[in-house]
Length: 494
Image (cartoon, rainbow, N blue to C red; front, top):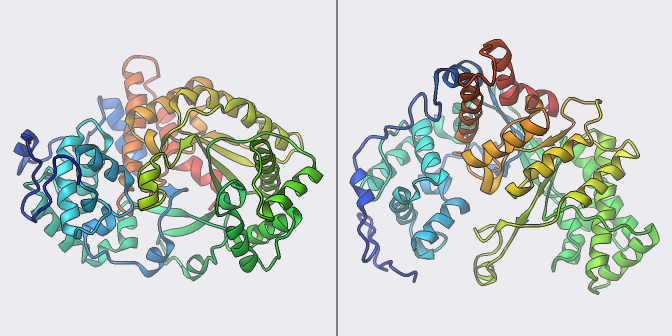
């Protein structure tokens, strides 16, 4: 049991022992900050947002939404199912407050878990969760009341009532946010049956996919050979040699391409760059396939070689490649053993990024085989490194060919977004930026596009007010509309 929590939680109140919850005085008080001009500090920011950003549809070009729920147009049973399940942002906040794991990922009822979150919300002041929580309640369910332990029960009932309405099905929730396209993320093993079965009605949400082959790259992972055995079954290729692995991956890439895939994604600590001959790579793969372990150097040699092979293949097909770099994952081994990965035990890493990334991009570019590329950076100290790196490989062939991706994960909040956009503005062209994505598993996360657009407009609006930018709404407004929608529409060509 976590310190400070009673075990006999009931549905009317959740008590923290020996604490005075002054935040609970907000019960029944109306939310007074999520208004029309939320985050917009002057008239220029307001005009940019309301006239140029807000009307734009959403292209969410990278997320982890379950395609099966979009195809089935799932109607969620309650708010906990759609809002709390899998949301490690909320889980980390609850743990920090001393909430027992029973009410987070454990056996507590959905209502008990929601009330535990309601109790936590007032303590998230200055964390983006406080903004996101009330923005989502307002946008989807028109609830203006602050969420806390006293309002939690009534909000739970009201939202659950609304979730039974047809317009609040999965596709209905997306339509409410003016979502034009969602791009989910699938492993090479995926049959894409859901994507193949999904047919968007006229004016409905389009769904695409991104190829995520990390498990075939992470040769040092414990389950690597087991994964290759599964890849054999799906691809129909017996994987005994390195050439076999490349053939199997190419088979899956072609399959994804035939089914409308035009993007890939990689979640890596850093890009490796330790070169080896083809013969050396074949030998070390044979060694690992036989059950032996590899040295750190051999591991990096394999990762370098397979990423180069994949990069050239993506270029051949005209795909966009995405690299999410810098996460230090699974830090708490005790909790990892209990709950598994992606349950809230990750943080920002301090890896060396520049030289290896440069070598990798240069190796592809030197063969004229560097495709459109987005680099997402998780460590804010590397923003300027990445912002200058992309400029090395923007060769004039495509507008914004190599992109510094939006602030993600721990940086997809106001401060992180502003730092990313300032670095990009100072050292590149923010006018070419493809904008925001949710990178989320939740159908209620799409107001984050609104959040981003408000931060974007406020950044420009403040500089118009200070005289640093011209008061030319045709010029600045077009830039805002492009970043919000048009650039992504052109870049991804869904």
